[in-house]
Image 1 (spheres, rainbow, N blue to C red):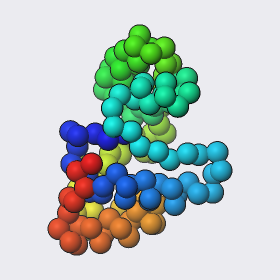
Image 2: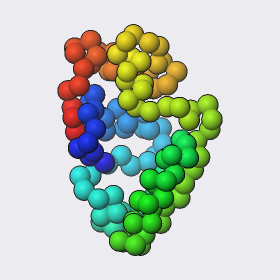
Image 3: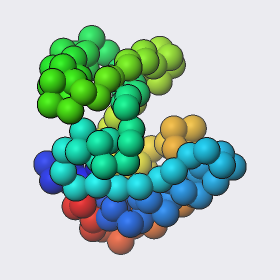
Image 4: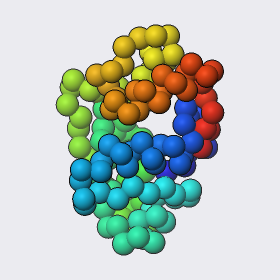
Amino acid sequence: MVNRTKASLFTVDERISMIKEVVAKYPNVKVDSWSGLLVDYCKTNGVSAIVKGLRAVSDFDYELQMAQMNLQLKGVDTLFMATTPAYSFLSSSLVKEIANYGGDVSALVPANVLSLMKARLAEGGNRGSN
């Protein structure tokens, strides 16, 4: 999804390219983007349920409101999956900040993303706000 409220390190097209490379081994995975409401994407593409990962209880409060709204608006169900505690602290902004200061994030991102992230940060950072 295109999120205009977040400052992204990569453009949407760059992120799609990286994700496609990572999931290429899974023939049943489709990588796509959308600018607008997720439920509109779901209805346009015949998706009847959304699966969302939850890191913490604080995520649940916001995501539950969204799930209820999505069901009300378009009849799209949402399923929640709790993350493994080993990754519950992760966020893209935290990983980006650690990498920006030279910290080792190699265990937190795929190898192709790591090399592109290092190159982008060496160039001076945020290039693709969406």
